[in-house]
Length: 238
Image (cartoon, rainbow, N blue to C red; front, side):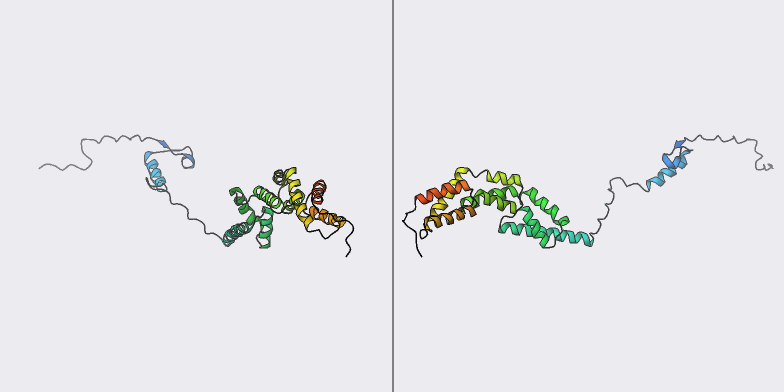
């Protein structure tokens, strides 16, 4: 009968297990703070950090846009109103930027709202004070017989920049002024045939002066006009 061996009484002794050297890794920043941990801890940390990472091939979700507040909606409404009013007024007649600003103020739109929109329309060429000045100068001089002085006053009244007014008036030469004033004087003298020379001269002078012609132009135009007038001797009695 074979005797039983007691547990642990084996003649073979177990070799002492060797400690397996684990590589030491350093974690960055505040996690490691310069301390070394083993690979198991590093792996756990890496797995924990990955829970915050974006999965490969997937874009991070975009933040939901903030809802516009009541003030933003009101500003947008007034901006649209500014554009509509400006386009409508410019379609009716030429207006300078200053005139448009006065109109918008009367419509209770504050400069903080309409100024950026007028800047945008001006950059697009919708509002153009230079073109307006040139157009008004040509139209008033050629069609209405208005002199440069009167045109200048009208452009200043519209608050157009002085340099733009100067450029617009530069297109009207002195010869053009005299020619237009003479045409008006000759036509007007025919309507003063019932007046004596002194009265007709006074009225003709006032007419040309109100048109905006300078004194030297007025005198020359009147001389030509009276040379074409059928003179009658004596004073007309009424």
